[in-house]
Image (cartoon, rainbow, N blue to C red):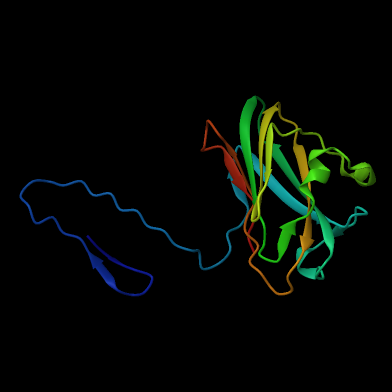
Amino acid sequence: LEAATAGGTVLAIANGGAKPAKLTLTTTGIPEVPLDAAGNGYSIKRTWYTMEGAEVSPDQVRQGVRLVTVIEVNPFGGGEARLMVNDPLPAGFEIDNPNLMASGDVAALDWLDLNAEPGHAEFRQDRFLAAVDWYGKDPFRLAYIVRAVSPGSFHLPAASVEDMYRPDYRAWTGAG
């Protein structure tokens, strides 16, 4: 077996013995272009809003501005699922006051129309994670608050949703 690597070098693997050998080859890498949104069984959408509820693009945000990040997951069929939602943050953002969302004290954000209560949510330094038990075919929405803390241009990683017991049922947003 011969294959060229991304660096242009040729990798050659040969069986020097008389008996057949099984080969398992694992590769990793970074896509040259951002992946498009896709999925199987679900779709996921991430949208940012001002604190007043106006939709905004994250590439137009100034340092120090707070945004509401809304994740909407749409199941393509009915049934029940234990889902894991993973939303990695761009490097210039950090989660702002996770206790606000966890305590339910969001009276100023009544425009959100949230309809899911995560069984577990984590507000990590680099991502928002939520475990959601979902029944039926209706979409659900989750939200949390971020703050732009560093000026600059940053990679926007894809948010994803995955069925914890059927991992082939998953979806991701586009990256950029």
